[in-house]
Length: 477
Image (cartoon, rainbow, N blue to C red; front, top):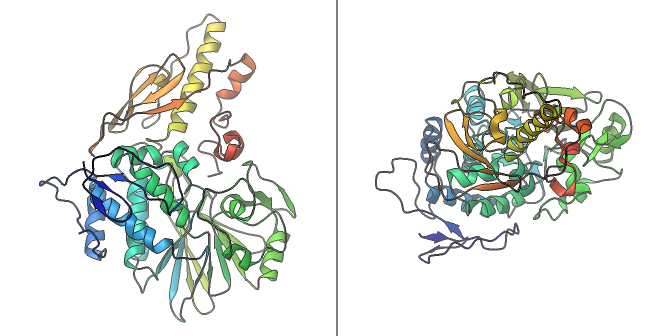
């Protein structure tokens, strides 16, 4: 099998990959030979990405066809070369009479992303976009989303802007689906390259020197200047605290002052914090994402902060609208455009989400313990379509939309998830072993584990309890 590194194609045979996320460390990527019958989008090595290539790739994705590994690699190589040269704070200039569209979280909802383009026009030099992080995880078409956005960035480097979200990190991808989706649709060796590219994404943007756009929010201390953001060495996994962490994780609240974040990371900040930051930096507005909103957006803090969220009916569960914002120069007048979810192939959300499967397994185990204690059989209920059955605690096949995923419970209480049978070529020798701690579950805990918010003691991002960070399908994303 040929292998690719960051600089050239090699004929060497190897299965070695690196686990580093430093963008300067070469990553060896395995690719299969191109099948003569392959009819998907193609690009020659080193050739600039064209609009024709992107539209063909989008059509293939819409028809549930995979791009070949070789061309996915070419996109990643080109986008990495672009992003690594950018500052951590990117300044965008929109000329008078023109507009820019700001979108929030997409979370692997590819068909809703294409709906945005159909409503608002595809990206171009005349129709610039800023996507404000969280392209991946949760939704089951994350690869399609991120490759589409990356390809447009390569084609329109001065009109397509991409920011890092808290889900463009290795630890979140390992929990919430993107890692395993990459394994299944490309192969395991690609994941390290994606992790490197994510580390190259800018952390914030300023539009026309008046609007700050960040994924999460503001900071635990006053007197943070735009120059402080500009000077962040972002080429790493985010730390547990500090400006970089807070840009990705913080949330506003409706009161004054600061408080602990319900996520367990970042800070919760009030309207006075927002006003001081804007005044100190001669800005008018903060636009951020990171939270589901019923209408796809919320205007807060006396009109000085807007949350924008662009994943409608989040995870096929929330029933929310998505939204995007158009800003028109020079006054930067805004128009917020809500939109509803569109149909997508019958693949459940979180189909690659090992976190979801672990939670379902734990709930089932808790029910079995309660039933055993009362000498009654566990209750059975009809499962709604496109949900994970409680039976995942037992070995067998989990039906995931049009996929069949093998799930086993080993003696060590590990969930073993084999790659789903699906439209794309899958390396069937690869499995993901998800450790499920075998700590005793008392009757006091059993009732708690039945609730969706009880996601405690799952391997945490940044060493912080996931239960404190995110409730599954909750409003914190």
